[in-house]
Length: 300
Image (tube, rainbow, N blue to C red):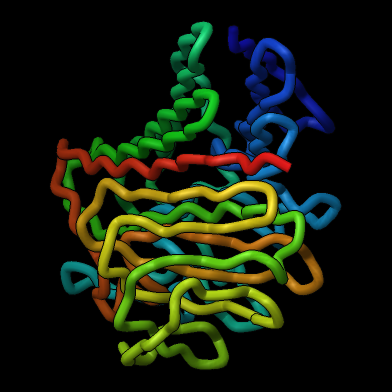
C-alpha cells in the first residue's frame, strides 16, 4: 500500500509518497512549483535534488512555464505589444525557466492503492503581471507504481486573451557512475547557442548511439525525431516517453556530479522570439502533455 505524508522544513512544504516497505519513495516540493525533487525505486536513487546545492541555483525537477529555458534580455513581442520578464539569470541578462518554479502548489486530490499512488497538484495565477498579463491554471497529475512514473501536465487558459507558451521539465537523474552511463535518442538536428545559451541556429547533428557520457560536458539542446529517450546506467535503465509528436531535449551535466539533467521540452531557448516550438493557447482552452518514466532495475 502506498502512503502519503506531509512535511514542513524551514517553511518549505513537502509531500512524501512511500510504498509499504519504504524501499521506494517520491518527494514533491509544494513550495517549489510542485517539483519532484527525489525519486527512489527499490532503494535505488533515480531522480535527485543535488543536495546540498541550493535549489535556487539548480532548479531540481522544476516545472518550466510559460517558457522553458531562456528568453534573451527577458524581452519578447506578442500581439504587437512589447513585454519584458525579470532577468533572473543576472550574469547573462536572461529570463530563466519561466514563472512557476518558485510558486506554491496545492494538493487538490490524491488516491492511494496497493499498486499505485496518484497525486494532483494545482496552481492558479493570482494576479496579472506586466511581463505576462494572462490568467492560467496548471494541474500536475503524478502517478507512481512499482516501476513507472507518469507526470501529466495540463495548462488551462482561464482568462480572456490568447497567450504564447512552451513547457519543460528539469529533472536530474542520478547515476552510480556517469562515466559508465549512456543515452539513446534519435535526432538529426541540434540547436546552436551563443555564450549566453540563447539559440542562434538549427544545425545538423550526427551523434553515434548509444551516446556515452564518459568525459563529456553537456549544455546542449536537440530536436528529437521520436518520442523516447533512454538513459542507461550501471544500476538501472529508464525510458522517458512523451505524448507529444514534436519534442525537444536539453541535456546538462553539472560539474563533478554523477548526475545529468535530461529535460524534455516543447520548445527551445528564446522560443518567444525565434518561435521554435512556440504554442498559442486560446481563452478557456487547455493543453495537456504527459511524460512517462519506465524504470528497469538491474540485478547484481
